[in-house]
Length: 331
Ligand code: FES
Ligand SMILES: [Fe+2]
Image (cartoon, rainbow, N blue to C red):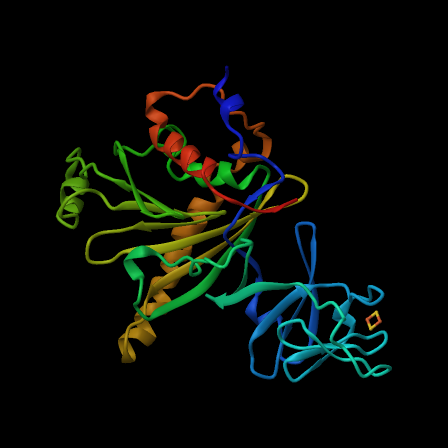
């Protein structure tokens, strides 16, 4: 049996794991207005109430199906544009102008949405044990500065984009990296897995010998993946790590839409004001290199993982992790 025939979820169109997915930028959802957003096959209405909190519901009114984006945001509630039924911040129908009793009226299906890094994210899991929106492990609990990087489209499933970052064979072939990477895998939580390079900087030339002084142990290259299609990368010398989050989602026509997020620690005072924008700009260059690398290959690839070899170990670890993920939403 070919390897890909044993895989059920990895790279499979229509299967979307439970996790956080980016929907749109925070700035695009203004207070007091309702917006139509389509996430794969799910039609949503999104609005920001008077309390500045963003809410997402299934888009169509349970009365006759008017799209609620044409309705009115009233404080933290939304009113349907057709017969003016009103639904509160939990989606419960609280008012029907033509009738007093609303107790037997079905409510709107609410979706969990949250904001971070200037993006609105949706949680696709059915259960209540949702995680936090992905934060690079080294930065957990630390105040952050961030900026949205680039948006991109790749002509393949998000999984194919994700494994590219731990595909050590292609670093040597496509990117001509002279370092031999070896990725050690660690499970950080039920829904989070990490790959860290364990090899030191090789002393192949004067420049590398110099660079080695800034890496106490191994050359820092760490990828973290959460259930769903979000991953983060950490690179750089010990005194200055760069962090990029890759938030991906599939499209109905089998492609990947990605958004990079550039992150750094918040630095106080003048130093933060001057240094952080420079650092985030440098991070963007690194992110763009990753996001735009391998362009030709991804425009024509017909991904089918038929022949795994030992050098693919990290990829196989990732596939196994992905096979365990709970379904979140089918499309
Ligand atoms: S369709 Fe929404 S109130 Fe009638
Ligand atoms: Fe690459």
